[in-house]
Image (cartoon, rainbow, N blue to C red; front, side):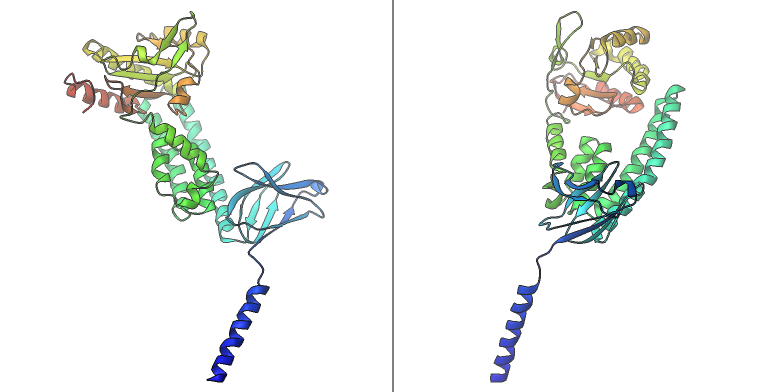
Length: 367
């Protein structure tokens, strides 16, 4: 019995000694800069979200090193002009190579980050081809459905890549970085659904909290929300408000557009068809010219023979309020001013209006 007690005591002492001698978790970033002309220059480690410098080191013999402790892994940047590389700052030994081709490795999240960035490069080549195809179709005045098909392929490429990485990193710093990139291509409704799949390590990440604010603002102008008013001074010094048209007892289709926008012009035949078909039945259409010079808007109105009223020179006021990232953006408002649908385009827009007008029984809101 005494021997057993003695053994237990020695084990406890040994465990205590080992615990005391075990260093706290930390990270070491061992870096190489392939461009020897940068010897003597300063390389910086910064926090991507706050842009604050965390550490700096002079490059010597093409090498640099950072050491620190990350209580929570975060997304950082290694920067020395003209090179910069995203890095997951997490405890462990990280290897970094800065140059024409950046390479970050050594820890699980950084290994996956490097794969993600490589896949982005491949996807970007596809995106450039898609963009070229879309531009050519717009120049050729191709049918809207054909243009939307290319755009859908473009969007699917981004979604497939980003979701594959996000799904397996939906509660860590890499997932936050993936979402930060992905959000550039996500409409607010889709961003909202993705955020619902994120763990606290992502929703509390400083890269993601601004995205949450965007979604919160979007909810205020989402479907079934009451319209948010705005007032714009017109070229003739009068003022016009959205509330002059919306919430007056009629359905109103509001088209946010610009004269220089090819896809906006592509929508005009659909809008004209809807206007001719339903205006006498009580449907109103309102154009809101954004991000455009007033004289260019007026010229386009004349060229396109637009018959419905316009709010000119709105610039970013309504697009900021309604979280509109791209145009054309068309919103249908109910007679009581509530949003029925957003992002209507082409044939899908015509179908929606047909449905609404055929089912309209004169009620002041969508049932």
